[in-house]
Image (cartoon, rainbow, N blue to C red):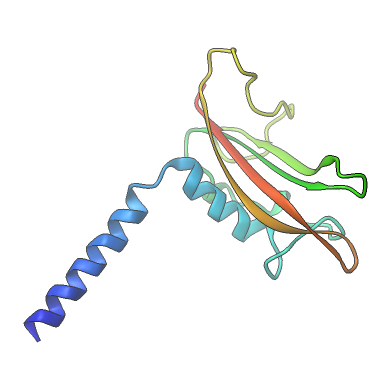
Length: 135
């Protein structure tokens, strides 16, 4: 019994440590995906998408930019959705995207491969990218 409790405590401590030591962009990309995907797929054919991302899913006090890309029939990378969020988690106005390299503002980014439905029944490989920065 003591051994089981010790093992459980060790596993629990490891699990909690992994969650609290995550970077803001790593935590945000998982939450953005949960909010923006439907049935494990990002769909350009639906009226919802990155607009469904909740402010609580984004790092508090930091700007964020989310972008979903896929590859078209010619093999070119195509942005199918993008949204810039201000430090309160609301869609920014104007939509500017992440700071340019050399602007003096450091961004951190996370990427993950996601399925993207470009039209009914046409699912392609894509990428979700989330960048986070403070101003």
